Image (cartoon, rainbow, N blue to C red; front, side, top):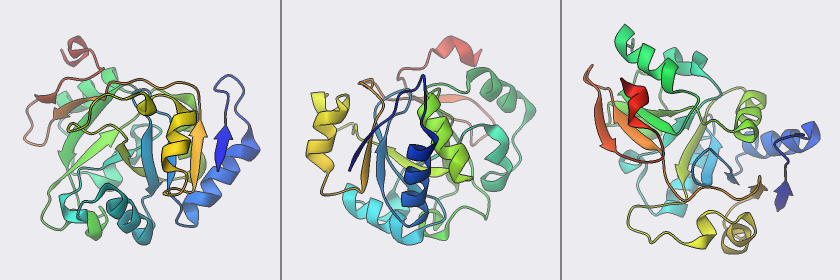
Length: 207
């Protein structure tokens, strides 16, 4: 199913259809402030397993992000964040950054297992923000872009994305053309700031 949303006039009924899909274990493709992303409800283990199968990876090997609408969910899934790290996050978010932080015991066991960290995203995209706020908890997410792939048109054109993935996912959310560059990944799990991947985010924000 292809659903169209205008970020200047977001339809509440469409948002409700999307969140109902997620709550029922569905997988969606949706716009962020970087590339389009695959996502499912963090509270739906079977959906997480399905997402892993779709990406052909084991859950404990997955580097999924927790996409949040703001920083209010942090304490639910991460250990205490040092003040200097939190200040950087407040400056950078919402924006095209993924912060890797120490995970706490609330992270779904399916994903955690031997992993001690979690990636946190707060995209600067109104459609994404509305979906996550209406859902009431983070979306487990992974970008369509993969470092082993070439940068192809279907990463940014929702019509082509739908043609490629309509049989694999439940919904594709058309929010207009997406970007072709991924987020900047910052590892803060050891109380230091280490750039893991330079993406769309400006490094000057990190101080």
